[in-house]
Image 1 (cartoon, rainbow over the protein chains, first blue to last red):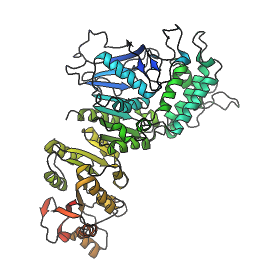
Image 2 (cartoon, one colour; image 1 turned 90 degrees about the vertical axis):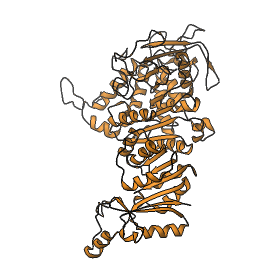
Image 3 (cartoon, chains in turn blue, cyan; image 1 turned 120 degrees about the vertical axis):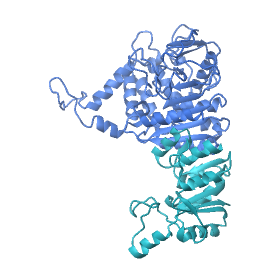
Length: 383
Length: 197
């Protein structure tokens, strides 16, 4: 890392924020502006600006892809893929990762202050789409002086943004890696999200979204939303292996016992409660509503007259798709739909289903084959 | 990175035109595609059923899609490639005739290579041993082989005639060497056909 020059340019580095004054034209027809974007960059842009990689994060992710999280202190969420000696390496690549608009880690969202009123936007924030998130990223890249992306990479909702990129900006993307993702949200995907949103909105603290003033946030509702969603990120086999029907140990009984009550008797209950509770400390409930809504509206074919293949006819980008065999949230069949459309449009496409016991979460976990595929695909562009 | 290609692949690699567009169906770990790309500037795409093979091929920078020749060829547009290649895969498909039809729809020409089941060693094994042949090119036993449609050179010629396809080239291999066309059905271990519709 010593060879990487430290940029004097204040636009580049860790924990950056940009205020983009030009309003964004949103899918809904509304305009949003000025727009704040929180982001990080790693590495340095080369002379011909040909080494830029944009990383897109998932629903509850953030810009801290390869640096410690300021709230949780945990290492970057994709440190297995991005970092020294990894397929995306700041020694070779200029890496950009920004917080999606609608989120709550420094980019404009329902929790940020509306300059017109001095109060948080709350539910007065415009409803967004995945395409809007991509438009905001493009505006950020304009600000950073980046014209073309060597690669855009994302998993899950990040994959939706990555796949949307070449459809909106066909000439700005050279390659696109879409991991554990889909070209549209299915009825089942929407259904799970609706459960989460209803849990938040049923929390008496939610109050139509205006909960920022007194600090009484709808944490119970948000925790339930997270618990339900978290189940969809895991596989049944993974849950069984990790918890089975094992009981939660207690100080008075290390092996646990049935209490004949409604405490978290089972380890899996205790785990989910912990997931819910730790999530509410780092995430805004209204952001959860807005981002899940954006994912539900996501359907690339629908934006191109019902033909997914048509979405990719204008781009020369190379595509790499990866699915996981135990992912039932965005199963392999969804990736195949994208591959078939790419084949029909004549695009250069690679696709592989990798094996993992961890369900949808596999894209964030140890998977040497994923690294090998991403590394080979990225280097393949240089042949 | 010039590795030694399997003899039937080397033969195909010698025949493919410089800069052609090629779809390699059942491309394995991409050895032929890599050779075509590196030596002949070919725009090669692959289809392969085995995930670890696909990962290996993508890992070498090739465009390979995990899929099944029996079900996934329909998604490729007509005449989108100069050549479609099916090497040592024909006998593993559920409907070899339909797969070749698809190859000839997608590609201007199609290479089809397969082990010849009528090679004399196999015949002896059946005739005198009464057992299904287990040979160098067909190393699996009858119960675990992926080869569900064994085919002979003459069988394949008959299919070509019946469907009205044109043979633009044919090559026969014995061991790792090319052999004569005479009595290929008896003496060739391996056949490579170049077809056109």
